[in-house]
Structures are given as structure tokens and as C-alpha cells.
Image (tube, rainbow, N blue to C red; front, top):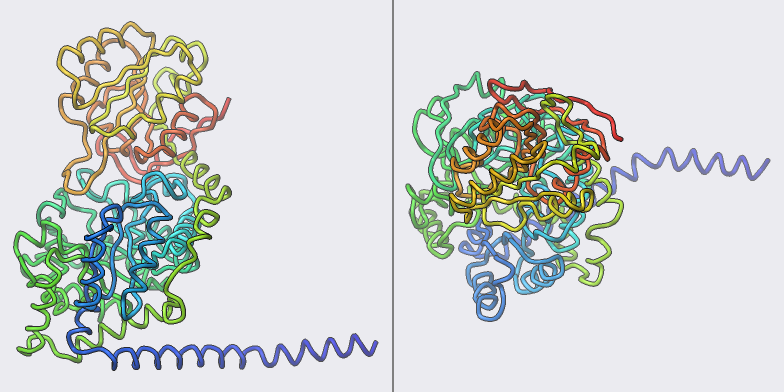
Length: 578
């Protein structure tokens, strides 16, 4: 009885102390952060402060020998605030980020475009997630939370601490060549749900999250890697559609917002890229949406910027507009020199620069970089591609497969129909990934399958031979692949290949098209008997599509966008597994 009373009193005392202790702990952290930020800021020269506003691109495979030494020289002489890594393996990225962190005087922000996990850059390493549109097609925002969390954990394991995701753009233009399946869809409230979940997952996983591309890059038909897109929407339309996911991201505590290289004349009154417009960054994002986190530009090396603002002018204009970080300008020293001159001439005030540097330093402190900036390279293998994470990602990809049409009950293929079918891979790109998993998966199920392939090297005579062979079969399954790539400007099959598929469709044989590049591809051959949509060309999508195609798993996905003239958002035939 005495022991029970003592335990009860202990619990009561602990409960009464808890709020005060928690408050004291938060205050200590805040005091420690403020002290480190101000001491670090004070230690930096005016030029070093400007260096904190710049991040350099790093291709991991090339960062060896003399190139690595040059990069390290830039870090020290220019005082860069961070780097953006591309390529590599988990081990090589971890080793490189450690080397760079040890070189830098101030801990580095290390960013990466890991929108669908590490494999977006590493190709063959990292948990194999599908694209955002596939996550939305699977239907559960909790999957976006898990993807954000797992990606953040794997990124931190290899030394990457800033994720340039989630994409918060609505894909409300079916001809969009740059966003497309990177978006969660076209419905603003539904997209906001997935963006919110992804932001929270990323933060829980320990990395900085970034909502992009503000104020919305979805309603464009021009690739900003090539030229400057223009969106003619007015403020009322933006408020009703594009801004909804960004407001949700800010409410969820997103750490950073990336600005878009798009002109918005009805909003700004000019043709300036939004990245360089104070009306977009300062007035709309900072003042109206009340966002006080990091504002980062999209890469200043993209055509939308370089064609109009060469040298260091783009970096100056971006910081003038309200950005904190000028991302990967093509001429780093010229950009630093231009920023330096802008301060000396009074074009940029020192107070304005310090405001951004403080935000950057606060982010670094909150990442724990003041205490430890390197990672344990021995732990990488156990932290990346954990079996439970891989199983979860494969399950989401499988649940995303969306059956939009099934004329004559063609899908899923039963054993008889599969044995008599021809399987035709139509690859728009000279990329071994296109069909790499699909073909062996088909052959494992149908050992004597007729498997044919057309790619950019296929001649007119070879197309005719493939057409003749395919139309001997009782049914034809077309696996259509188009790689979405920066600067490519399209996610459609080349017309010669699209015409070949249309000839198959008009041959009189029942044709099922599996669109591995997203739902809009089906517009090129609307007469096909059956359509199934995968939301990417990656191995995880090919594996999932094959399982659903043969009935090993049910079709459960729902279309997150409208395919004009064919299918409405929400479409999707539900099937059972064999």
C-alpha cells in the first residue's frame, strides 16, 4: 500500500513537472539555436555571408581527383552554403558528403531531387517508390507520409539533409511535359492531402521538406528547362486551384518553398519569371501566405532563366525578389561577384542578406549540423532499402495500377489468352530500363511467349515485320514506355511509334495498351480495346503492372487526373486477383 501511494505520488509529481520541463527544454534549444546562429553569422565576412546563399551542383561520379579538389576549393574560397548531389550510390554519396562537410568552414546544406526516393538519382539503389501520381492513384495519403519519412531517413543516412519535394503542383494541363506524373493529381484539395502527408513524413524522417514549384507549374505546356512557360491565370484562379496545396504545405510546417521559373503576367503585370519577381516571392509567399521558412529558387541553370539573365544577374534578382538560396547558378563565382557588387552599390542591403543567412543557419542548426555534420558510412547498408520499406513501396505501386478500359474482358490475361498473345514493347528512348523488368516477367509466366520490341533504332522495314508477326497472335499487349527527362519537352510517343500502335489497334486483333508513362499517353491511340496505366517506367512499376496484367494482383487504382475526351478523374475498373 505504501509502495502504491509512493508510485502514485511520483506519477503526479512527474505529470505536474512535465509541461514546465518541456517548456524549459524548448527554451534551452531556442537559446542554443539563437546563440549558434548569431555567433556563426558574426564570424562570417560580408562576402562569406553571400556565399551562404549559393549552392553548387555536384555529379557524384565525377567528383574525384582534380574535380573533387576544385569543388573543395570552391567551398572554401567562395564560402558556399551547400551543394546539390546527383547520381552516385549510397556509399559514394555518403563518402563524398562527409569529405565536403569536413572541408567546409560552416556545415553544408546538402540537397537532392529525391522526389520518389533515392532511386530518382541513383537508379539502382534506395527504396523503389513509384511517382507521386501513382501514390495518389493508390488512394491513401498515409502512403505519401511513409514515402516521405523513408526517403528522408535514407537521405540522412547518406548525408543528404534537404529534400526538394514534395511536388505541390496540380497537373491541370495534360500536355505538361515537365510535371506530369510528378504531381499527385489535378484536384486541389486531394493534392493538398497528399502534400501535407508527405511534408509531415519528410520532417519526421529528419530532413528538410520543400513544396515546389510555387505558385504552381502544372498548367504549362513548355518545359522550363528549355524556355519560359507562361500561365495566364489570374489571382482568383490561383487562389481556387494552384495555391491550395501550397497553403496546406505551409500549414503543415513545410521547411522550404521552391519558386517556379514561370511568367504570371496577370499576377505580376510583367513577363518576369516568378523566381525573379518580388510580387511572387515577397508579396504573395512571404506576406500573404505568411511563410517564414527557406525560399529556394529552382535551378538557375535552366533555360527559362539563362536565356534572359546570363552571368550573375539571375542570382541578384532572385535574392532581391525574396529568395534565401540561389540554387545551382551556372557561374558560381560570377554570381557571388554580382551579389557582392549589388551589396556595395546599395542594390541589396546588408540587412536583407543577413535575414536570409539567419534562415539558412537556423535550418542547419535544426538539422543537428552544429553538433554533427558527417554520417556513419558503416551504417549505410543497413539503413537504405530496408526489407519492410521495400515491401511497402512495392505494395503502393501495385495498388496504383489503374485499369481504364477492358473491352471484351481482355484483362487480366488468363493462361489460354496469354499463351496466344504477342507482347510488344514500344520504347520511345534508347534506355535499357524500358522493358527491362517487363520482358523477363512475361517470359517467366509464358515461357514460349512472342515478345517483340520497337525502339528509336527500329527501321521502317523492321516495324513492318513486327506488325506482321504481332497480328498473327490472338491478342496483342503493347507496353508503351516514354521516359520523362529534363529538357526533353514531351512525354508522348514519337509519331512514328504512335502510328505503329494505331496500326496494331486497327488490325482487327484485340489490343491492350499498358501506358508506362502515365495516363495521358492513351490519347495517342484511343481505339485500343483495353487500357491500363502505370505511373512510371521504373522497375517497380513494371513489376507491379505485370502482376496485375496476369491477374496475380487486383487492379485497384483510381485515375487522379482527367484524360480529355476519354476518362474522368476517379475512373478505374476494379478487378480481383486470380
